Amino acid sequence: MAVGTVVVLALVLLNLPAGAAGRVKLAVGSLFLPLFGLAGAGQSFVDRASFSLLTRDTLIAEMERLRKENGDLSITAAQARDLLGENNRLRAALGWTNRVPWKTRLTRVIAREPSSFWRGATVDFGTTDGARLQLPVVTRDGLVGRIRAVAPSQSQIALIGDPECGVSVIVAETRDLGILQEARSATAGDGTVTIRLLQNSPAVLAGHHVLTSGLGGVFPRGITVGEIVDTRQVEGGLYTEARVRLAANLNRLEEVFILMP
Image 1 (cartoon, rainbow, N blue to C red):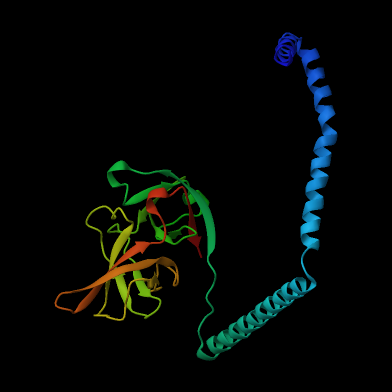
Image 2: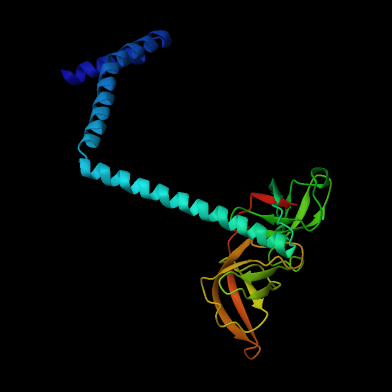
């Protein structure tokens, strides 16, 4: 009998006009609104009860932890301000000019040539937008390349590993200088390139971080390039070569930043 009743009601509802069906749905929904409100109130009560179950000692310990964390952050901020002031005073004493922060311009990658996919890309940023040759290109993860050709409405980028995109780099942990070598073929499938250090550097190890050195006048100092995967001695131990996993994924470029002084 119950099954038959359900079937009859279903057939009646399916054959109702659209307006009548809407009114029936509204009426049925209004019947359940008090239940929804009761469920929400019950959940709120459970949440409040769970907080009330915390002991006084637990709450005091949490407050002390937050107070200590706030104090540590305040001390760190004060130290950073003091170091910044000291840095500015030393620069003034030595006659060094302050480092001017670069401005960024977000652009969209609009083309990748299949024949040179690993070497370049085209962005919707041209001379009418202020583009010019040699401007560095980055993502939020790290260095991508530089502008090598410009047009009124778009520019071409030479990516890391392209012969036209030489990069002077430095190993952050050891301060060893090196040169990003020209890639003879597409960047490795694991996203690595090779750098040659200017001398044999056994202190350079896997896990060390590679940054732009600022030498050469194209790329500002301190842009992340990647992380060293492994090293080897070449030419009878005169030099050290290192494979570097790039921080920026060149296979997934959609938006990039142009650095503008």
